[in-house]
Length: 171
Image 1 (cartoon, rainbow, N blue to C red):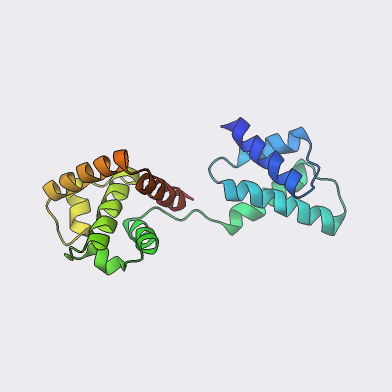
Image 2 (cartoon, rainbow, N blue to C red):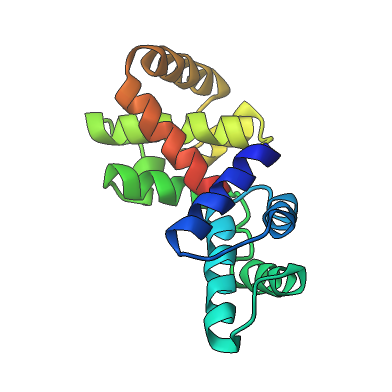
């Protein structure tokens, strides 16, 4: 929400000892809506401008900082490849193993997480998702999704891990 983003901007400004007026805080929060790192980066950039130029933060400097930050971090498109790579890093298995027929517990778990996340964040059909995993049948995808839903309901550690992966992918 806008209030949450404003609170994040104020907190970061306080941490960095930057005096931002309410209109500047509001401007930043209204223009950066999806990424906390960009909110924090904008405040850091404003502090840098303040130190280098010796000027008090204003809307014009905030616009410039937002422009710099948005240019620095173009959003990474959410693709099956990006999701599998993120799951691969998190579970310490190779992307090739996730896509393979291997059935060891750690690889199967990573594969099920990848299938679940792909289903949650993309518009791919179950058949299209199965095609990414050694042409698995869509019924296998349904089984994987049901298994993950059960695991996520009972394993809060796994749920937190999946939520973190989704957050990382969306940022």
